[in-house]
Image 1 (cartoon, one colour):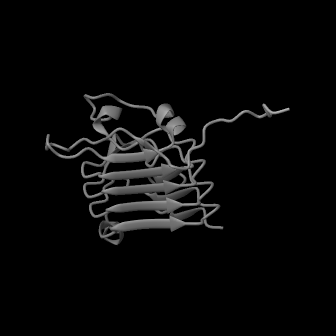
Image 2 (image 1 turned 30 degrees about the vertical axis):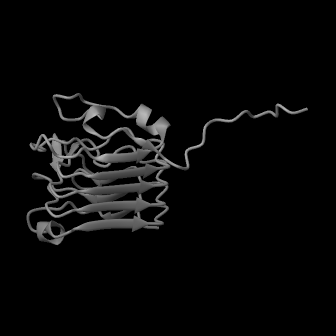
Image 3 (image 1 turned 90 degrees about the vertical axis):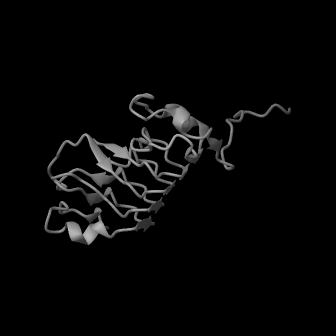
Length: 181
């Protein structure tokens, strides 16, 4: 019945609780609407490496600005060590960080399945190494085609990711009537 994991904003005093957060795994939380409320001042998750969320049908955003009842506008949220994102069966998920650009310069792997409302992937700003391998993406073709991008100058463009591997479970539309008589 939980609506969120942490609804109080991560302020200067409570920042120590989440500065060491390395892995965020959420599984089978049907009424969860968001995961964590971010700080009012400079939201930052310095140690987060893995974001793994499965079967949370009502989840709209993983990170929500400010307190659950208030809205704060950020231009970006930094995830310097985030390497893996695995999202599965989250039909209401629109983006990982609400009202903010998610920056993940160390991102390596993204697996997304059953997230039909998803509109944004993380931007890769801060990735200064030109020879570094691009992140691999496994996603349904319909979801990939519906994603919104800011452009190459903003380091948020499909060309900055490996060519997506469409999910092995992706099914093409089939005829609803039989062709056999």
